[in-house]
Length: 118
Image 1: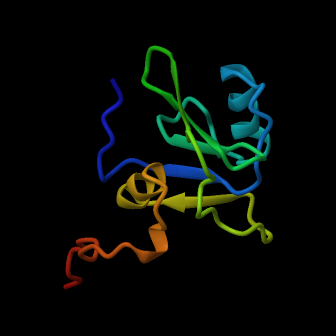
Image 2: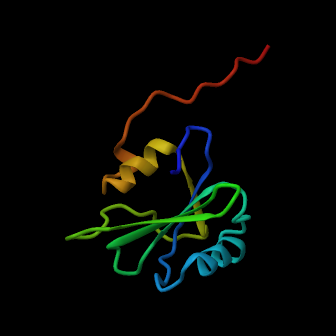
């Protein structure tokens, strides 16, 4: 089981990927496109070209997990637009909204806690 905590780094691939890729292919994309270490423990989120399916890749210290959600109808409504960035970092609540086919930009949560500077 993957436990998603507020401290986790979540990296979303902006460009859609070929979902014929398995764990090794997605890990290679993490290195080359997202410029991140697939063994880092980060969650890596990918979308297919048809915007009907999402995959999440994670390394838990012993091995890789791949989770996939395929919509039974329709398409994922929100995905960041492709600009110059290949990756967008998400907060946990944004990933939860995305998984439920919501718009993370429309979610409201309390601001992140930060220690006061002395």
